[in-house]
Length: 557
Image 1 (cartoon, one colour):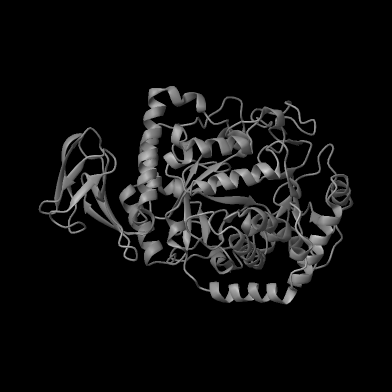
Image 2 (tube, rainbow, N blue to C red; image 1 turned 120 degrees about the vertical axis):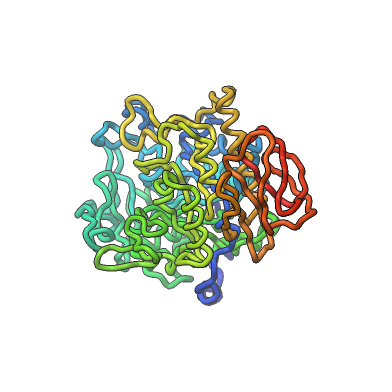
């Protein structure tokens, strides 16, 4: 951790506790900031995106003897920063970045059913207080966040509170009063999902416990060797004095997770395996994170054009919109069988929509209508969902063969709700890798080498146009959806609060075309098609265009 002054460490406990309580009261039932439901998130595996510093490619004697795509491949924080500064994300319309966890990982490997695997993915944490050197340093992380903020992009950290990494050939296990390795989760009821170990390659943190525990000897030894033991211990003393929380495993981790918010201004968290820990924990994490971000914002008031509250989106596997998975139709409750939980009541502004990739395989018209109704007037009104087509651990991605990346962009970037691009969606990165097994097939290195190919250029240009249009118009993600014409498919999105409005046509004829805009825009009003750049004027509720494209994105001049 970056050193802090003694005054900061010893800030008055009563003042900070009161601030946290005041925030919790203020946030109760507060609707989601519309910004987030229209956000375009770019999710990348840090190790697989861009390698800017080859000097950090090998650490802890990690070798290249793993199974296919299960070794470290060199992607790092400097590579992400380079792409931020080049404008890659701005060109794509991205306004939020999310990368896999940056914490220091176990140093060794784990032999799984499909072969040897190293922790390139970031979910086998050994030390929550350090950045893994394969991705860089804490200074590199700060530089990446600062660069993103300078481009108007917010940053989500992927955080893990449910488990540690496995005991490997060289790594010492966390103590028994911190973790369990059995029983394995059985999925039949709440207890068998929460108070259990998710996988043999993990060690479940005992998040149900409020019993004080000592710090692991291996962690104290590590801090001592790095010259920061006394600093870390002093920070922990100050944290537990201020909060009054017991020195239980979950609360140590909450302290460590929020440090990077307070030090570097992380804008939010994507929470891993949220349903595998007691839901009350997430509200504590949210309150502490919000307090930390507000402290950082006070010191850095001009880092971003606008100030927003801390944002938290959760991974609740099988949560979905409109009755998908274990979410009963017409509700936002997750059903464990013997208990139902509304995670939005426990600090989450949004949840990952696990059903979107399957919904997208159906009719786009009905999907858009269902999502708009649910988010604007249905069970999800006032909260959010993050839609995706491909992810790092979903066995059923949309368009696995990448046969139609144009249609994929239409469905994801024009859908109501938050959109998550998985790295390479916009460049048709292959999802079928020879000799790769399991989730490794979704985790190849970013296909920068394909950007010179005409087809890849065309795909990327399409994603960029839709992404920039989405970023410019909050109505795309938050507005009320209305079909204006069946064939070609024309619809409007109108956001009543902001007054923003757009009309979109899909599968329109190439060349000359007439597009119905109804009463969305006034007769005589001048519009621009953001896809072609052409200007037109509304006459009798319609506009005429002559463009070589089948997509029309209409906006007021």
